[in-house]
Image (tube, rainbow, N blue to C red; front, side, top):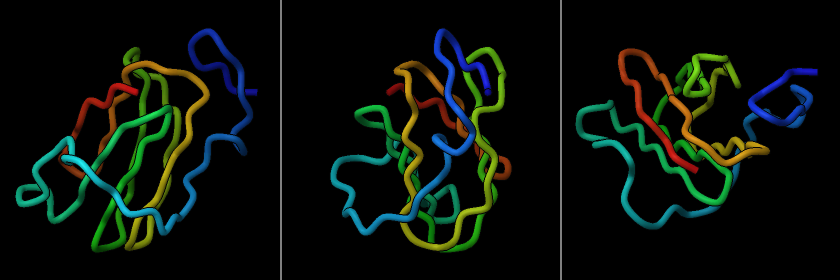
Length: 99
């Protein structure tokens, strides 16, 4: 079991999943300066839309690794079991996401 904050969850429960869901609203980052990658946070989920294959790492605000994965082009979601502030790192881009 991986301890994250005040709750426990297995690694299988916090994996990225591809989705066909259309994203509405404003991206948390400027896709023009991040190679077209868009990051969204809402309802306990971090969503990334990417035009190319990327490696993404998600950390708690305390620096604990929550997820590390290589995402294929398209839309992917990471459902987390706890609300909070997370850091999403893609290459040289680091974005704070509150969910």
